[in-house]
Length: 284
Image (cartoon, helix red, strand yellow):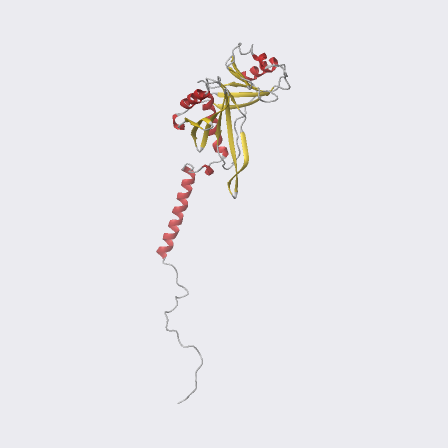
């Protein structure tokens, strides 16, 4: 008998490896493709038709009209005082996430009211705002505060800032910029321009072209506020008394406000130089 040892490996006793040509069953491939197509279709339909579920899904461009409409509602609700719309402010310094820049749009309405009636006027404004906003006034350690929700993640706030003065703000919060804010500006021709020219003349200040902002009124038309700087006028605000018919709506060291021929005029005496605002508002 030969004692030679044959080299090589012993045959494997484990399971046979799968054949190199094995594939998924045809039915599984078809099901996977169908499921992928279905998910893609549902995602497209959702993106097209569903409303945004968080603020970060709506751009500043899309939120702008909501803000403008809210300002118009506020002007209409503040008919008992002397309103003035401030120029819009767009702040691009916020971040939506660590990887995405954003912007915030804020518009404001200043309201001059008789001293002592600030809280009552704040509550009256809340009552006149749309019911869907769920507006309310609560007393805080810093005084009464109005809060409301204008929809589409746009918030409305109001507070007393000084004797005889309220301030209402409409705020989008940080969100994608989109094409930017496209509203607010208006041409200089209107009744507010004439009222400003009268006030500037009474203060011995040269006439200037006003900066005009606008907002849509709830019942149609536009509310408009023109703003001019009264230069280096040294004439006391009492010079405006003839325009106010001798009885201003508000007169404090910081404010002089009156109505003349359907235009609300507010002189901000706390600024140097004085800022003049003239507003044609919405029907209350």
